Length: 115
Image 1 (cartoon, rainbow, N blue to C red):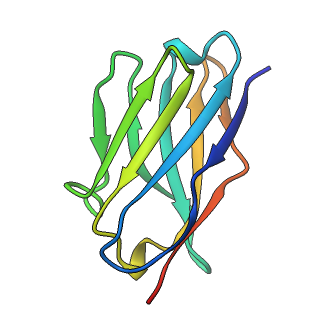
Image 2 (image 1 turned 90 degrees about the vertical axis):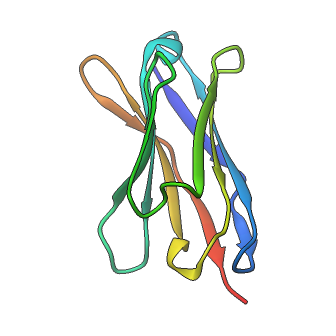
């Protein structure tokens, strides 16, 4: 069974940075594609970034150049480094693991960008 636990969320001011972590358990973690999604109040959940098992990243246009996704397979952890944050980045951020037959989600971590 795969479990994902996000951490690192919080309240920051516009322009500041934050790093989210997603710690994963389970034997398939290191060979799986993993992604970050977010869901703002009143909006649908949206894809933010993905990193493949071979370490190839891809980003949504809204975060390209500001966010960086990375993974540490030795720690079974995926990171999302977020910089130049704006109030529009306020959301609950979720980690997703793409398994062979299903996806797994974490419980989410709140990011609030406000002055």
